[in-house]
Length: 92
Image 1 (cartoon, rainbow, N blue to C red):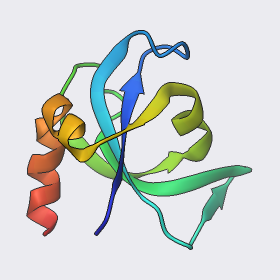
Image 2: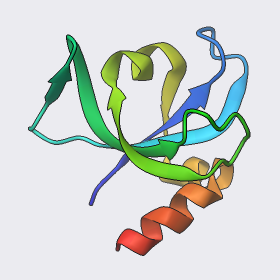
Image 3: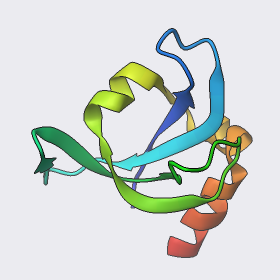
């Protein structure tokens, strides 16, 4: 499965990194819930507030990606969030 990686930030000014990465699987199939566009993703559990947090598969709001995240390379994602890749490697 091909993922696009986004670094998550604590603030909308992109000054303070959360130390976690969101791996989004973009498909032609959109999910809309309560008026929000959702994407399939793997990311740190929303209750986890620590860098390199444990991850879970989920649906993620597209708007949040634009306001709190920046697209990054796979290598940077691996450097920031190794636990994400430990999980993704189990899916291969």
